[in-house]
Image 1 (tube, rainbow, N blue to C red):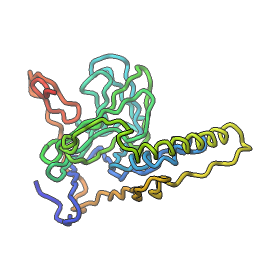
Image 2 (image 1 turned 60 degrees about the vertical axis):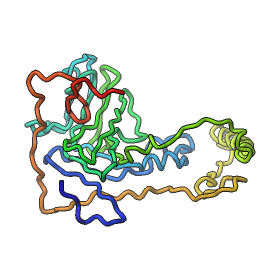
Image 3 (image 1 turned 135 degrees about the horizontal axis):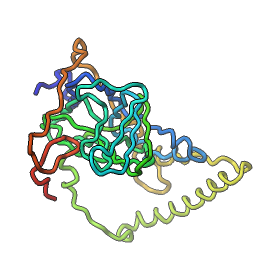
Image 4 (image 1 turned 180 degrees about the vertical axis):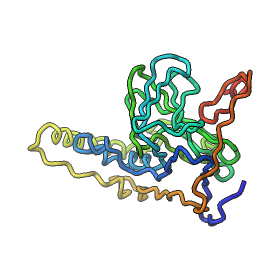
Length: 298
């Protein structure tokens, strides 16, 4: 498969090959904030840097139109009800959401085949830290450095009868590249905190300071007369009290936006998803649509 010739040695190519014109799904770097974080009392959740960093870890996929989903409780594929309040999508196997797998699973059609560098997988999931009532986002790991088929984002609807609505332009999925073998390269161990005297001493100091700060925050939330607590910026500045080691943490991920490599081609190539062969049996993957004879062994 061809590669993007515009990439430099300092950048690793991450290519989205558009193979169908609809649905038109935008790919955008995920922002750091979430509306619910700002809505927490005192907007305290918006001060959590680990949340901000996790929010930016990948690219979000934005819905092409307003969609309503409902699972009627049936276990078959007909149990998923999909409505399009702004008008039905184009036919010919191009609907944005479909339900081939049953049990309340809604699959979002992605009009791209993704290609990552060798050894880099793609985590395909719902948008990070965007909870939805009655919905569990399913995670799928794709070997996108060689797999030549498109993927889907999958939601598991968990409350029969509940209508879930997503607006046009709202994120429904997220893609996150990661090194395939990284986790297997670690040797996990568990040790007592007292094995590290320096860390033990710091934890005692940190616990006392954190307890004091939580009392201040609690008082602020209980009465308007309490002074608004100042934001503790020690983590952001990389200075943790008496801890002798410091490093300014990465606050902004700086993900680049997807660029159009051949801008003169606007329509893509209309391709229908391949049908399952007649009489085929086995375990079908909701993310790739591929059939495994017995499924992968654990």
